[in-house]
Every structure is written in C-alpha cells, then in structure tokens.
Length: 200
View 1 (cartoon, rainbow, N blue to C red):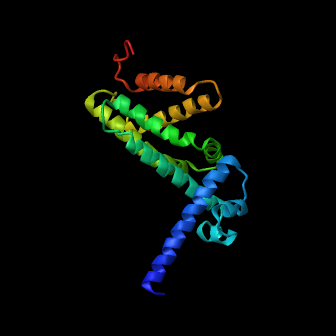
View 2 (cartoon, rainbow, N blue to C red):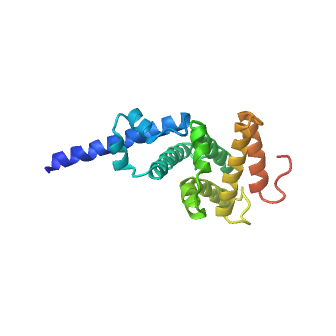
View 3 (cartoon, rainbow, N blue to C red):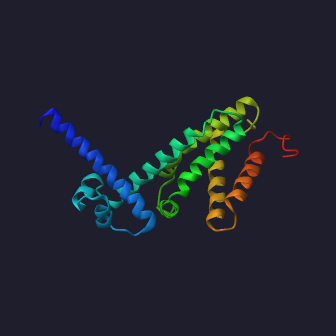
C-alpha cells in the first residue's frame, strides 16, 4: 500500500470512529437500550465497521466515557482555573464540568450505573480530579483553603459533593440556581481554614 493510500485509510478510520462515537452518544442519550445496529445506522456505517473499531458494547461505552470526559476536561480548562480566587475558580471549573454532563443526562446516568472496579472508577475520574486538585492546591498554597488535609482527598470529596448536588437537581429538589448556591456554601465550609467561616 502506498503512503498516500495508507494515510487515506487512516483518515477514513478516524472519521468512521468519530462518526460512530457521535452517533452512540446522541442515540444512547435518547435510547439507552439502542442496539449496535441502530448506532451503525445512525453513524452511516455497517455493523461490521462498528465492530472493527469497538469489538463489544463495553469497548464502545469505554470510548463514550472517554469522549465525554475529554469534553468536560476541555470545558474545565477553558474556565480559567488559574484566574482569580481559588474559590471562584473551583466553582467555575465545577460548573463547566456540570454543564457538559448536563448535555447528556440519560447517558451520564447509564454510565454511572455501569459496574466498575475502584481502580477503573478512579481512572475514569482522574482527568477531572486532576483539574480540581490543581485548584485546591493553589488555594492551599495561598492560604485560602485549609492545608490540613491532602488536596487529593479534598478533590475526591468535592467530586462526590458535586455529584450529590447534581442528583438533587435531576430529582427536581433543587433548581440550578439553588444548587449553585448550595455548592458554594458547602465547599466554603469544607475548604476554608478553621475559624475563617464567619459571615460566609
């Protein structure tokens, strides 16, 4: 195979893979039980092409998780985590991630229900946790956040709090504005140094 033909083949493969992922995300968010045949049809490729890129539904879901995570991380980076106070930066970063997740509510619930070992779950959250950890470390270095606990632990707790608040919104028990206020209050109480909560 010539070099140009090989390049064309790789470009076609990338396009097909991207089209399959786009279709899978769109279709699975509307129809969680959508078949691989339906995803292939929505992507404009054959079932065999889907299997050539993703040998099983599990492989496809792994790639879907990675795609959504990449999208969330890009949004978090665009939220300027190094600008302004650490508290404001952390809230911007969390909101950027939440807005990405909010575009795929059904699919995110489906992903959350997938069985995963603690190691796989940690790897799944690692890119997001790294961004949050970086903001928390900045706040600790400046004295804005308590440095008595490891930043990694605080990042993990922050993610769980964010999930809990998001679940309250999904259940209709909090509006998005109420959720944003609640998240700010809880994070300030969690992260601010002892004795620095008065009037907050």
